[in-house]
Length: 185
Image (cartoon, rainbow, N blue to C red):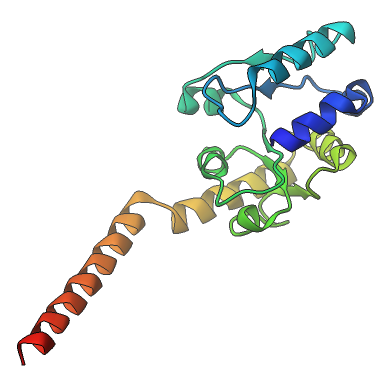
């Protein structure tokens, strides 16, 4: 996400935000150790210079559940990522998700349950944001968000994870007991 933000800072932010007709929210986590605070200051200065204070907001640390519940859409631009827990959290709340088309994210997201864009291609990100915001109340957007919610509930729920860990530990304990029995013989 940092690299995308750096690109926006050095690119023409006004051009990209002009594509998005709805208000935009940029989130800046207070405990983000990868992104130095001077970038937030630089971005805030750029937003003010361009007169985009009403369209773009920077926020500090937030309570994830409350914050995600307040969103219309969830955008996750990243150049590399593991699974992307924040995507699971937003998707579980049936929020429309727009994310980079990268390996870790594609383990959960596809064109049936989210809006993907090539990592670093801000014009395509902006176009997808505009499409989803413009069509937020449409059946197509709601169905896609619901598909993601169903997938997350089916494959990433707490009961399944507990069961998977239980099975894994049983296998480890069984292997350990077999090894002990072999050593005794």
